[in-house]
Image (tube, rainbow, N blue to C red; front, side):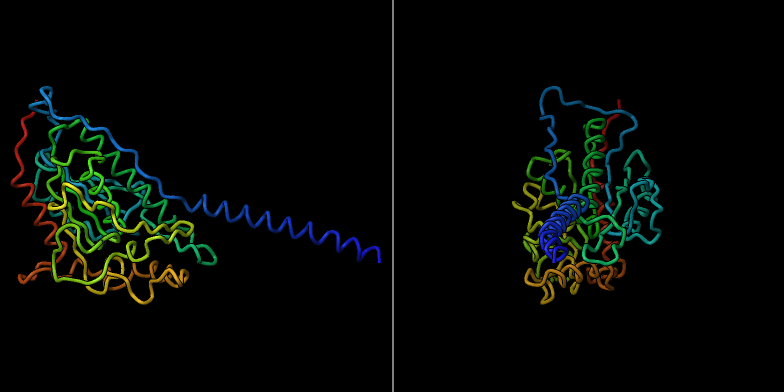
Length: 321
């Protein structure tokens, strides 16, 4: 009888310990999965009488930044000769540009970052970085590089292009730049192209290729805030002053950039997360190297490389000191 009484007294204490441990585990899960942070605005020097008329000899006329998609980069990849993923989609843009232009005319820089998308409901855990952590790392790396180039090469102009997760990062940069909060001045941006942008709102920028319905997955699921996956909704204010310079490429059936679908719903979060994780590897999302965007049979990557080359060819030649 006494033992039974002791067990009854211990039971509430054990339950309390279990609850506390559960709360600690959930808190650690949120911390390790990462929370998105708003980038700190980068102060830019305004035009004035001290604006330089030339820049250092090692500065290119144009700085081209490409940002690979999920599973197409690593944090320690070589930004001038990326080899982390030999079939990375953005290599079909960066390599032709590197072959066409010397480094004095255009430097092509591929942002190295972890580029992963962990499934937070996978059991056992898949061992990848969360989307939030990956996107935060990629955005920070891109902003830091652009700020560094802008500080050293004040007259250089910029072209930015990204695919998938890289398109979200590139689009967010474009929105910040167009809103006056970016790492480079808006008038220095020659153009931006986003391939399969998860924050595509269907109205901002210029659509390239056959028209598609729907919006990006982050817009369709705006408000979803699960450990490691924050769906941020549309970019408030779009691309601001550089809207006319931003291009969107999205293939019909690609859930990353053209949602909603019946499967993507805040009413069924586990199913939506599963679809989202799988969408990054579906055949349509992986087809942009063959996805045709015009009557001439030009593919998305060919169009992007040709578009960038045209901007480089017409960019001003900058005097060097």
